[in-house]
Amino acid sequence: INKDFTFNNPSQFFMIDNKDIVCSYSKYGDFIDEVKSEDISFGELIDKDILQVITGLVYSKTDEVPYTTSKAILTATNISLEKHALVYPKQRYLKDSVSISEDLKPKKGDIIISIASGSMKHLGKVAYVEENIDKYIGGFLSIIRSNDIEYSKIILYNLLSKRFRTFISRLKDQNINNLSTGQLRKFKIKIPKDIDEFNNLCIEKETNNNVI
Image (cartoon, rainbow, N blue to C red):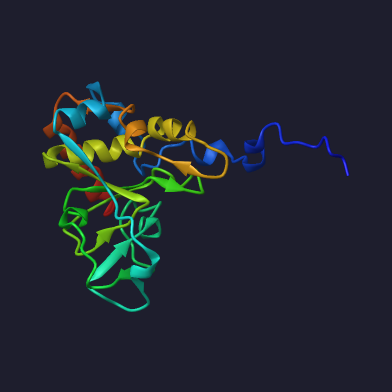
């Protein structure tokens, strides 16, 4: 046995194809980058009370039950990478007696984002919430809530952009990947000069394609 054998760079054994990560996740391309806009950091939007980030519930495994209750928990598997929407292949349930803040229920206009994943492709994936959801987000998710719903689609298409995927690709940390609110604060959001015009453009594109 060669006792001198060492891993100088363990992360090299978790190499991934950046082409799958550094690309736009938007079906319509990055039209957010084509409109006149100004760059404002995510952190500034939080500080100005335009956005808030709500971290998901961390709970004990002993609170989980194998049957349906009123406390359904959403996980990263409930975010469709292709549709950017919530899907329900399976859910987790907690005991009815578990106390959970109502703030953890997704509301219309919210964006749910995956903040931890073993896959860089799925880290930072998002779902746009079309209607109020009577379920709660789990610990590996966060809600990005716009205090003015006019900003919701602006934030969505920034987070689907190639710019954001490039930002995510720099967060690789061996075989576990995390996106903290502190890291998210650094990302530059493009805010269109004419917000109404941009939202009308979103409606036009989404209506022609039925779904995001």
